[in-house]
Length: 471
Image 1 (cartoon, rainbow, N blue to C red):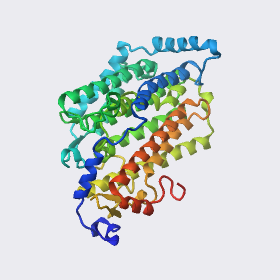
Image 2 (image 1 turned 180 degrees about the vertical axis):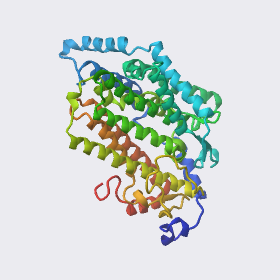
Image 3 (image 1 turned 180 degrees about the horizontal axis):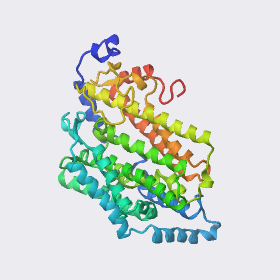
Image 4 (image 1 turned 90 degrees about the horizontal axis):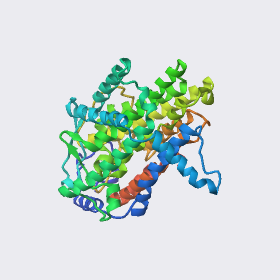
């Protein structure tokens, strides 16, 4: 282990070795096996797999058919009829029509084709313990694919081949199709992985392993399916649902409200950030450790695009007078979004590029927009006995999860943009903070095992988990 002074020096003044030590490899081997159940074990994940689709239908029904308010049975005698009404809404307005299949399926095929043929930046991922610390190469062409998708959608809309308002008009049908795709791919990938003998970190419980996934690095040709699905489907759909809502408003009122414009900006920022920094994704926990199961597959195919944009659904189906603000409130709303976005974008960039620097990668993409301080020069870090390095510079000197804090603030603004008109758009921020807290718990627990006393030292150097000088 290096000296206390050396462990806190900028990279340029310390040793250049970054691979895991022999002891580190033993710890990695332990962490790369099934240690304990998460999410409440088999019964917990079964509840999630069945409960979330039901919740998504319920919120959609409340937004579209009950003025955006939560609806319940009016009495004990009304319980049966209540569920009958709920099912009638789904059967009539959310059945998987062939038209919805053509829209959703067309997007999937189009994005797969673009991911295959569009030239891209080749990025090396982190060494994967289960592959003997070999690295995988990732074709990063999301930004070009996104621009092509935008241009294609604009042409189709302008020439009335496919009007973007069709998305919001068929949202219930599209949501059901997305759910079917998510469930089918989740179970299909599990059985395919078992059949090909590529399973890893298995618990032995069928439903739990379907939820967590069996395969770590699923690929079709040059396409890494985990990375493709993380960017190309959910955030593309989120953005186009917002644009569809804006088009719907323009057709109805002849203008787009500042609230809907806010959601178009917010979703564009997120989608564009995913595309312009796609080369950072291979450095993340999702690529490096998380398997491709229901947890990731269903949520990206259906959960994200159809439960993060409830404010858009509300605005597209309600008069603007119900969520109109004063000019100072709009200024505060947009300012909060942009400041949070800057912290989120730059902190994620700092962390990912730090990991690249450890691998000897010093040349980075320059995709638009490159924000100031996205790279920390000669960053300070803690050299662990494991062999890894823990960043304690830039935003990461003040918080162990600055990106999570900024990300959550952005999610909160997605509900604030309609004020108190409906509680449902706040689901995103409420759900998201639960997800983030859970992920932090998983991450910190794993780090404590992986780094031991070095993690304790790190927590002393960066004592604030989320908000500097507060928590």
